[in-house]
Image 1 (tube, rainbow, N blue to C red):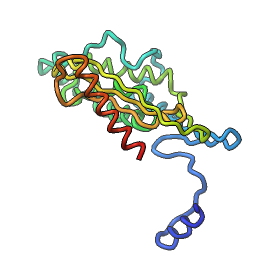
Image 2 (image 1 turned 60 degrees about the horizontal axis):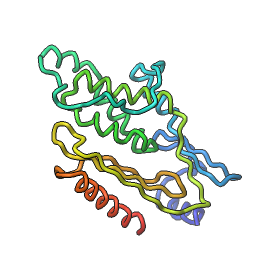
Image 3 (image 1 turned 90 degrees about the horizontal axis):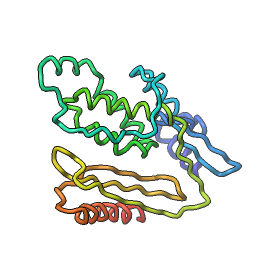
Length: 219
């Protein structure tokens, strides 16, 4: 079927068959035919990102966002001098690079990246330190890959909420993850659209969003 498709495409477009894909969107693709497993790695991309922000020799940390970071707009620059200092920091560029890693194969940094991205328009020193914490985490975990196997196609989902996590709006966070054969295929962490009045309400909102995603995935 693939050969037929290639032939049909070549009749309509100028194209060159380069064989099996080895790299796409910064991801290295390796295929173990004996084990029947496909690996997606961003190690090379992460190395380049760390070098871009001079974090290649930073001390690794064990979590993407340490518990002592309580980020809010209160930590945004309050004086012109502070704004001038932060204007020299490549905050938005770093967020963009982290989002690329997150979207492709790093669900483990999704929540942390979502938090620091809230302050792209006016970041402060504390926000920048939190962003560097994510980079330090990647420094120690760049070897992580997503490994897909054709032996198990069971779809499973997990969902949770964080009540009033955003200190500025007091909106809760919805987070869910879906796996096929134990490997992640879909993941989300985002603020809820309303202000939940209880943990139960926040959990119901999260479960509803996750259920809608499950219905779509099953189709």
